[in-house]
Image (cartoon, rainbow, N blue to C red; front, side, top):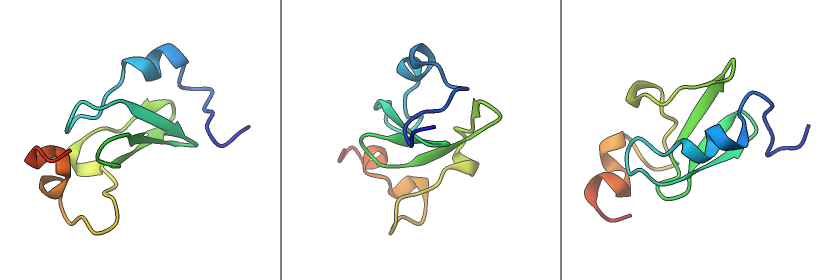
Length: 75
């Protein structure tokens, strides 16, 4: 399986998903969905994206989802 494929996520489903913080498109990278704008990451667990504030993987240097550029309008 290639790094950018996940059989549990169909291309149509991926196309419909957006970042819950800034509504930017997401890219699939293994078992993670990564926001193309703020770089927040979301795990995929048994084919279900975990896109809650409590489960977000923040980019390096960010301490809270409130610090993401899309939250402040800087994205």
